[in-house]
Length: 187
Image 1: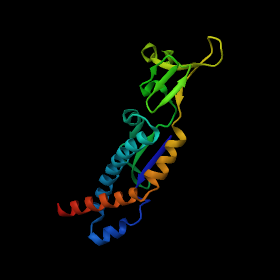
Image 2: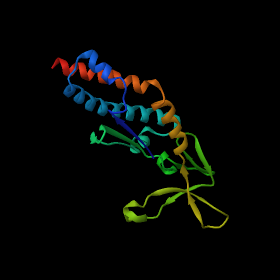
Image 3: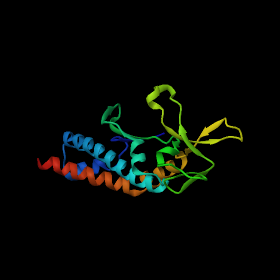
């Protein structure tokens, strides 16, 4: 799990923009609030597109694993959190199809000798029973193991290097912040 928090206290250069545009603290505060919300949306969109392509997953499945939390006031100011669910994903969620040799799925994934069967109900009752991809651990009928696709390390590397590590994030933040501040001054 990776959590990214966008806070107003960690941003440098806001005072420069504030002084340059001669904005009031109330205008800056309101502009920061809307900028944080818009940046969380921007980051979510970029994450869905980039992670789906990088990890060879359907965008629908990546979107299902992202959560954006509302703007909240913290001790240091305001912040918006974007949460990434990077636990292993069941292969069945990647449009898995049974073949004679095994199971194939989205992104050129193939597991030899795997099969699709009903999973156990688990803690959520009978409605959580669904199809899963399994593989036998030995030659016997049991035990079997659920087949999953690892997301953690490649996704974390992509998020740190491409989404947050690049200059796009800071550039976009200041662009939106300046726009919001100018709009508030014109009102």
